[in-house]
Image (cartoon, rainbow, N blue to C red; front, side):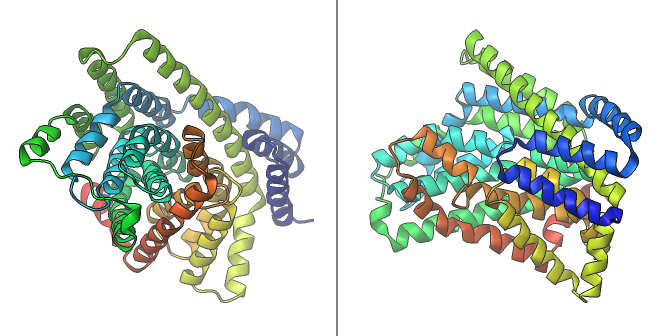
Length: 434
């Protein structure tokens, strides 16, 4: 059997293990170690295993992950996100569907600090859902808005998924963050349009909230100043070239802690809990990344991407057709695999094929994040949907499924726009970094 077919068998074995509910990190490590042993022998395999764990855990680029997670946990604990939603709720009062728009907008902004879709969905469920239900909103529209808004956390910078993609694809983190900004704003806008259309087509789903005075609206703008300051300093500093993403994450985490202490919102217990959560989440992510690096090395050794490229060329497929097939594959994979696992497993296989057909790896990173985002919210196993249901167990899962379906249009619209106008993702990185 050729190395390329050994690689194909390795991929099939990986998906079989995942189907059998083997943890992602264990499946990746098992296939990676055994695959490297078959291809290069025991001594080579153990050498790779030993160096990979050290190189990954000591990588300066990946130190941004625990820092951004800590910043998001502290921001959630100090209720900066609650200020954000309340300000949006007051500003949009009197508009039919205004609370849905407020939930999506607040989730997008909070995601810009936390970098995590799951954390954003959980936080906004606790903050926005009670307000929307109190106003008489339909459970489907309310949870659909929160799930859709929550998914923006991995697209709008800073994004943990993009940091991981950068490590695998050997790309610049600032360039990927710049590439994600405009598509993130476009997707937020499309989600808002979908929410407003639903509210106007089904008025009973979104009763109009009583209007407020302009004085009250102006007063509401003062509430989220701390959150906006945190965002401007961290993300603005990266785009302005003042400091690197890792430095921005450190400043952001310190800033969130400082704002919490100054505002007397952060207790010792909350700080300890945030640190514990950061350590556990970061450790899990790093173990998965180590496993994925072993798997990626195995895939490179077998030259499986070369086999896929040759197959696509023998079928005389054009670049657009190949990309559509890849997007469909991601949607199917998203039915049973969580986002980080999707990126770590598929990027080593698909990226060489995508580059071979002339696509930019920076542009492809945004496509990957969008389809991962889609996997977080499409039934039957979208992670954000289960997070919302866990936070609000009295809401039926069928209502959450019904509510999210109209919002699934938005990611596909954005993918189509990126295929037609790739500069949506590439213009800002070129402008900032050449």
